[in-house]
Structure formats: C-alpha cells, structure tokens
Length: 194
Image (cartoon, rainbow, N blue to C red; front, top):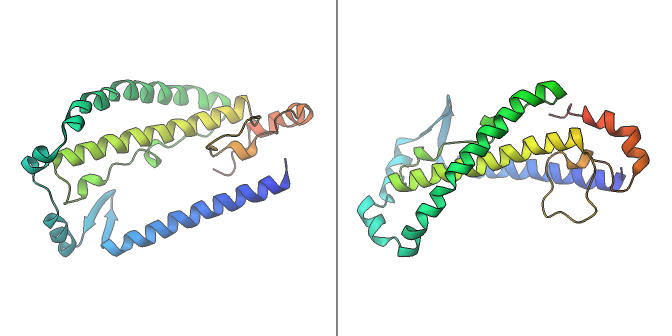
C-alpha cells in the first residue's frame, strides 16, 4: 500500500477525531450531563428551551401541504428499513463469529437522545427518533458491510468513491494481484484497531 495514502488516511482519521472532540466541546455550553444514557439539563436551560417550544396546533397549522402529503411516503420507508436492520443484524450474529470478525455494536450507531429536548413538540420528537433510527442503522449497516468486505474482498476500487468506509484503508490496491494473493489472509484478520 502507498505510504502517502496511509499518511493521508491517518490525517483524515485524526481530523475526524478532532472534529468530534470540538463538536462535543461546543455542546458543553448547553449545560447537560449524561447519566445512565439519559440526558439531564440544568433547570435554567430546560426553562429556556421550553420558551422555544412550538405548540402542537401551531406546528400543524404552519406545516406546508407538501410536508403533510409526503409524510406517508417518508414513514413508509420505515418498514423496509426495519426489515433490513433485522436481516443484517441476524447476518452479523450468525456469520461474524464463524469468520472471526468483531461484531459491530449497534448502540454505537443507533442513538436516541433527542426526546430530552424541551423545545421539541411530540411530532418533532417522533420525527427526530425516525431520523436517528434511520441514519443510525445506515451507519451500522455500512460498518457491518465494511467489515464483511474486508474479510471477503479487500480490494480498492478503480473508480473514485465519494465516501470511504472505515475499513477501506486496509484494502489492497486495484490491480495488485501479487499483494492480493500474498496478503489477503492477513488482511482478513486485521481488526486489531477496533
């Protein structure tokens, strides 16, 4: 593998971690703490948040017709999403132990915490739960797929990708037949960074 690519990927990972820390630091200005997966705000902050709560009738009255009409389509996608979630979770539970692939922890990806925000009404909280679930399972499934690809086909693509998954840096260069045959077995077990 190219050392320049390894250096760039290392910088990207470092910057991602730095970004996460900076976002978390900015969050600290809103005075909340997490205890046993629940979020607690200071009383003063909760009172300030409630000031910005849009009442349910006002929310519905101000909703555009296109939003209301498209809601069933948006929510209809939930059914295949749940089925995909179940299927991929079963796949991981059955296959990952067989291949020695470390399991992806679902709770690291599917996070529900927006219900603790006092400025959201019930519809906004339900919509936020939907988005949290959907985006969370997409990320969860992508990580399962990435680990599976690392085990079965750790070869980079010839074409440019718009998004690299977490395991891609370990893959063998496209067209490098010798490295594929010599390193495939080793790459299949390189999960020590998890």
